[in-house]
Image 1 (cartoon, rainbow, N blue to C red):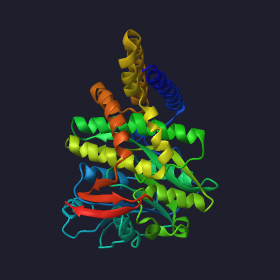
Image 2 (cartoon, one colour; image 1 turned 120 degrees about the vertical axis):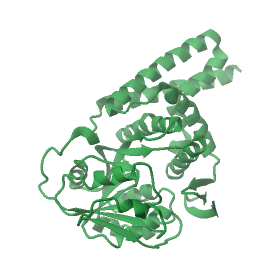
Image 3 (cartoon, one colour; image 1 turned 180 degrees about the vertical axis):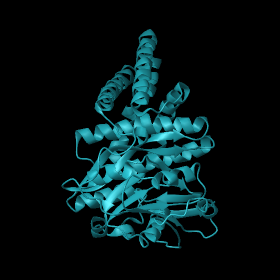
Image 4 (cartoon, rainbow, N blue to C red; image 1 turned 90 degrees about the horizontal axis):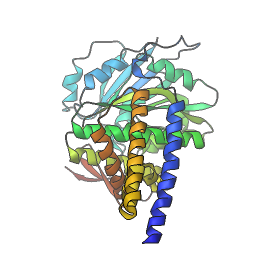
Amino acid sequence: MAYLTDFLAVLAVFSAIYWAMAWWQIERWRPRLPEDGRADGPLAEAPGVSILKPLHGVEPELLENLHSFLAQDYPRYEVVCGVQDPTDPVLALLQQLPVRANLHIVVHQQDLGGNPKVSNLAGIYAQTHYPLLVLADADIRVGPAYLVQLVRELQRPGVGVVSCLYRPRVAGGFWSQVLGVQIQEHFLPSVRLANSLGPNVYCAGASIAIRREVFEACGGFPAIAPALADDYAIGASVRAQGYRSVVSDYVVETIVAEPGFASFYRHALRWARTTRTVQPWGHAFSFLTYPLPLSLLLAAFLGKAGAALLVLVLVLRLVYHWRIVRKLRSPLPLSAVLLADVLGFWIWAHAQVASSVHWRGRNFSIDAHGQLHDGVER
């Protein structure tokens, strides 16, 4: 029993060290948020930008999200929305968008196999025109300075791809809040810290900016079609070409609308399983990012000392929460914060053995190389 207590104590110490480092990174960070207004100044050069929006079904607040991309403070860009199913109800919703010369709706049946979002993006890509590409998920919302900021960072010497971190915009009930906590208080700080300690390998499909010639040199969408982590595959291919991948200080919003526990759990497990695919060692030790559950386990063996430790960790956790909320201007309830920590630890363990994910109403198995294989349709 003493060995187990010592082992848990060591884990708790390492978890506390991680926590302190992540906290410090958040304190030093100066993010640019969607509500921060217009761009700081014009670009020296503003090449045309094609924004690719893969759509599937009517997602919460989709019209508002698309309107935000149509309101960019940028001289020349197009928004190309892609739909693979001609009976998809999202097509009726798109008719409510204003008629704009730079808005295009593409209905296609491109199928590269494997990742369904990549197939959709491939069909959209064939209808784009500009030298810069921005890939942005349907659930993403931005401010008017978004394109200027991404293009400015993409034009820096040696940069091949720019992606964004994101904060949650909760559009559902309690389980949406729990998932929101995992996004902004676990995922986001971990990316910030990882980037500060070594070369940046982060590249997230929420928002990716890349030059067309670089993307084509990487093999385009057919090269990443089988991958579960298609966004990570883009970043890895760009770095293999000798370019840097960077994380913008611009933070986009992701709409979080989970109707219940089952939906939340499937979503969180898919994210965790994706992380395990692309960074197996990093994911294996990511349980250290959950000091509260570790302290709960340790407290069970330490009596009064354990209770005092647990109170201390809980107080620090709440301060950590308050600082992130203030930095991102994104409040979330304390009940969701505490539950997200405990469930996050459990989901981490489940992801170690999970061999399939549920996505867009379908089951996909994942092989040892992180590639998707279509499962049973639901």
